[in-house]
Amino acid sequence: KEDLNHVAGQNFEQKANRKVSKTKTHILNGELAILARKKHLKQALKCFKHAEAKGMILDAHSYTNILNGYVRCGDMSGALEWFKGMVDSSVQPNIVTLTTLLKGFCEAGQLKEASDIFFHYILGINPTDYAITPSNTVNSQTLLNKTLEIKRNDVEMNVRSVNTFLRGCARVGAILAAMNAYSVTHLL
Image 1: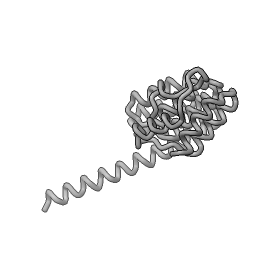
Image 2: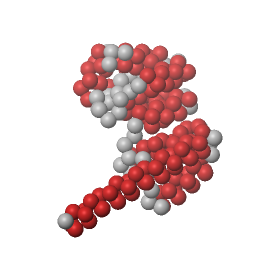
Image 3: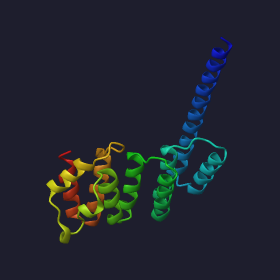
Image 4: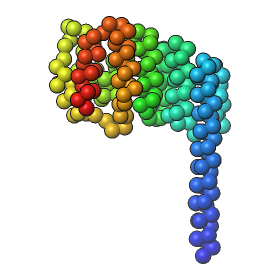
C-alpha cells in the first residue's frame, strides 16, 4: 500500500510539474508574440535564449513567434536560418509557422522560396513537380494527384496560407504559380 501511495504521489507531482511547465511556456509565448509584433527581435531572442538556458519547454509557438519577429523586421535570411534551427531541434513546424515564413518570402518578392514553402511544405509536393515559370508548365491534375499521393497529415493547409501565397504571386505577377496553386487547392 505504501508503494501505491508513493507511485500515486509521483504521478501527481509529474502531472503538476508538466502543467506548470506548460503555463510558463504559454506566458513566455505571449511575451515573445508581443516583442515580435513590436519588431523587438533582439529582445525576443534574448528572452528565448534565457528560457532555453533555464531548461524551459520551447514549442512550435515559441519558435514561430521568433520567426515572426524576423519576418516583421524583413530579415528573411535570418528567418530561414531560424526555421532550419527549429527543424534541427526536432520542433515540428505547424501551419502558422509555415504561413509566417510564406508571408515573409511573399512580402520580400522571393517567389521561388515562397513556392518551395507552399508547394513542398504545405501541400507536400516535390519541388521538381511544380512550375513557377511558363517554360515548366505542369498539368493541374498531375499536381493534384501528387498532392493526394504524398500529402502529409502533420500540416494542413488553410485559407490563410493559400491567400498569402496567391497575394504574393499577384504582387510579383506570377500568374502561372497562382494558377497552379489555385487549381490544386480548390480541388482538395
